[in-house]
Image 1 (cartoon, helix red, strand yellow):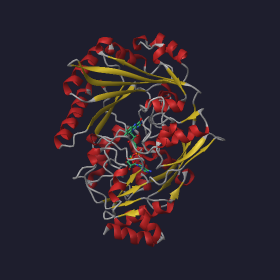
Image 2 (cartoon, protein in one colour):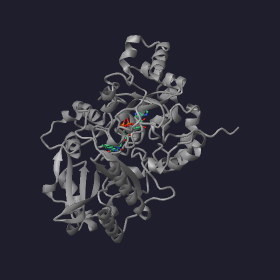
Image 3 (cartoon, rainbow, N blue to C red):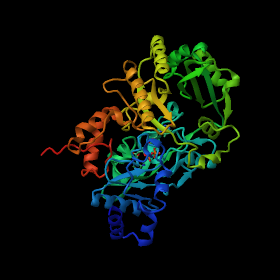
Image 4 (tube, rainbow, N blue to C red):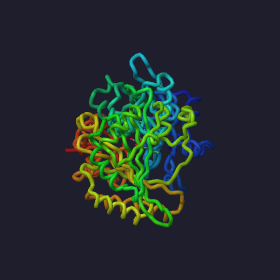
Length: 505
Ligand code: FDA
């Protein structure tokens, strides 16, 4: 019935019948499962018990998106918006209620303008495609966004977006200069017509609370002809703890051309369990200048000339995505990742260095727990200079690094699911004394439904505040005000959307 009602409503909204039959997929359509699964990036949400959408809408034009919003509103059915499908909790394609998916993969054009060093990029494009199209025009321009090329522009940019140029250039949203969006009334608006408040909200507040973002206009950033990358591993015997300890002392003040990610992974070597620290770097300059910085400020890293690889920026994108150095940049146009795992992620922010004894206890705990890894991502640099209220993303000055908790698995059983999710929660709980508090901050794009959800519409404001202040701190109130103004009927809602103010009578 939902599908039939949508067909009728689309037709009332002047979408021609031949187009409707191409863009609406009912569960009976033989291609339905393929379309649904094409952008599922977490196998936890692709099991037999996962609730399926009542219809998938795959617009090829703006008017189809307007009709989708108008009709979902009219029918009172939840609309889930999907661009790249990388949401860690799958909230772009799963729901506990009847719902339809608005799947934007057909809207993925990218227009790069060298004249003003900007680009218009549609939400259904993936980061790899964006990087490739920029490189095609100039090897001296780039864009600061995520390191995984299959992440979608729609979710990534509306939720913040960081990558290995964060210390030099900040977040993706710091470079968004215009946008096109379909609002709760089905209107197509740009920056001028939507106004500065709504434009502020969709740069980090999560697009899915405010409208369907069709495209963003972004400023590109300069990159040198050659950058330097490295990957240095340290076992506990090779003073991993000293190196991680020192990393925390220099991470936010060292030259902002340098970004270092640290992976902490439990490993087994010769039947002995321990933790390995891997330092992965991007330096926006040559190897000699990099070494002069690390030798003087971070000798514990032990970085040597043979560890340093100078490459073009686009080749550094491939290096960071684990492609070997014979791979051509055209691999970035591949929209399908090699493998899709069962996974769970969580996040934290660290504001004070963890002591050496604290790190030792963390390593011991990771070995005891089993499989969960941690990723430290450097902050500081320009992130210290951008005010917390500049965009909804509030985690700026005062943070040394962000932690991502990470566990992947292949086993489809319910026990595996429970076991690994318990493991990651246990490590998160163990980290409480070392990380931010009041609120314990989280990164919206590292979606984590453990930190709160709305499941009672009558209490959505109070429930929404629980996760809202963790993701947005003091910006939460402004997001609620904007939400109440632009979408009072809460057309754009999900498990962790921005709530409207409760009716005050
Ligand atoms: P998806 O389509 O699942 O959407 C995510 C959310 O945004 C949903 O709520 C959805 O409804 C909403 N949304 C999507 N398109 C929209 C639109 N057009 N209008 C309105 N709302 C829309 N993050 C990061 O900052 N740096 C990184 O390096 C990485 N790396 C990374 C690697 C891998 C393998 C994964 C799975 C994820 C990341 N991420 C990340 C996290 C990533 O930024 C986050 O999951 C993004 O929201 C993904 O955007 P997609 O469009 O792919 O997701």
